[in-house]
Image (cartoon, rainbow, N blue to C red):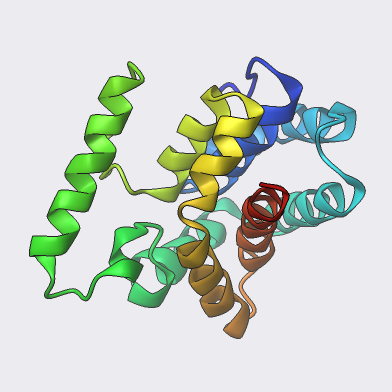
Length: 183
């Protein structure tokens, strides 16, 4: 789990991708490196830095197994918190709509030369953030603005249950919103 990404402005998306993945010991081991990147990165503003630092504090405040259990309860056992974004766009019984959306995402990744080395579907938010981190600044934020409505719903759902992950989603949503307003 290297969090080094070319281009300082896009490191935030790589960091967010890593922080939204299932927590493993490797994440805990790399927290000092992640904190250093957050502190040194001029592409991360003061408010974003505060959100990220607070979340890192959360990560160090609990045992790994407890953190893993909370992650599973939050994202895997609660459909309203799913990190698979098409889940929020289409009803569960609407596979005929969700399928083409997933295929389109997969095709887009292929067009950019991205080879997926994960068992996750292409709409998995950490995967989308990883992809965004490989784009230039304008492309990345425009790409994320396309899923901004879903990010807002997910952030609101997490906020309702006071999840420590909610501010991360709000941070992503705010970046996508600012891009949309600037366009």
